[in-house]
Image (tube, rainbow, N blue to C red; front, side, top):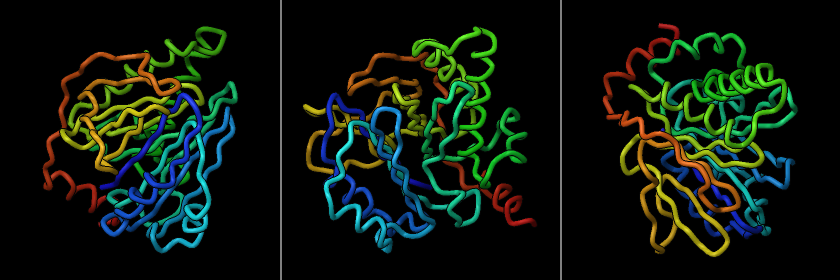
Length: 257
């Protein structure tokens, strides 16, 4: 699978220690890495289809202070899609208002008819990119219906509906940032943790330090602003259970067999 990392802060923080530990797991997730740093509505996005600890670019970045108020990071173990940069996270897309959305995903979508059409629209091949394109379409529909950009609460409600509708039979560990709110979701037990500190809250697939990490609340979409949880969605109770046999049809489909 993959590992994901996110930070939502009440102020800027140096993230190097966390990121060095996070990217050190790339021996288990060698098929790509990515990093998105957010400053107001600007994004510094870097990603490569190579093992993180073999990347000269990432090495240069980690040798200088990485300071951000909001950040997302990813290391990839490919399940759907070839080892190519277009299949590396984070994925970004803009809605019709010009707002950029950024998504990272640890999981696999096995069943979702609503995502199928994006196979022909996406740049890469991953189910993760299709999730983001679906979100963008839903936001654009809301813009058209409301004749204005949806509020933060309205956007959260849209994401909550999407997650609830997409979670049955699918593994959806997600971190999504819309320039204002960090959306957090897990439905696979013991696979996403958080640590609260003075500067904000950090999320990671695995604890990154000896400090106290807790499990992210389960099967419920959460929304964070400035390091504080401000929205809590509906508990959908759609826990994902790992079943290796469900991957066989996916491997065959994407290998052309």
